[in-house]
Length: 67
Image (cartoon, rainbow, N blue to C red):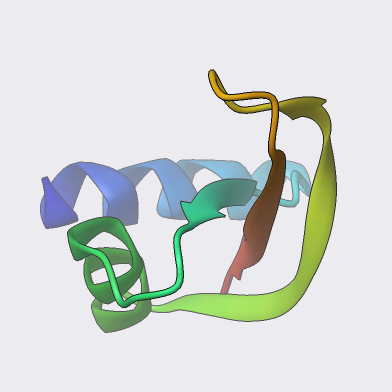
C-alpha cells in the first residue's frame, strides 16, 4: 500500500498535480492517519465536512497534501 501511495505522488509531481486527501478524525489516532503520516503525507489543517455522519453529527476531516 505504501508503494502505491508513493507511486501516485511520483507520477503526479511532473505534471504539476497537487495530491491531497482527507481522513475522518474521530478523536484518536487511526490507522489511516498513522499510515499517511508515516508515508510522507503532510497534515495541513482540520475542517468540518459539509456532510454529517450517520447519527447526524458533524464530521471533522484531517487534510493532507503529498510532499
